[in-house]
Length: 115
Image (tube, rainbow, N blue to C red; front, side, top):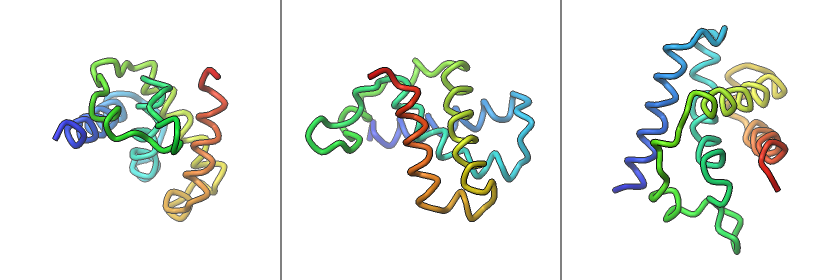
């Protein structure tokens, strides 16, 4: 249950951030980047969220993630990464639904994370 709660809280936090900040994004751009922004946030909170063996996000670590550590600075950084990936992939609905955007978002994220 805590895994689902953390995921829901993260998405709601992203939505609230987008609503209260003038990001100069259209409604469509906000919708198209929302889940990518939410996906990026746990990595910014805890760079060790990935399982060392599989390289995949560890659901147990995600369920224990302290979402109270989400700050406006982290939200802005996550949104910037997601929007850059989005624009690099075409900046439209098709881009948001493509596997290329996921790859690009993870690539940009890796550049921002400490090694």
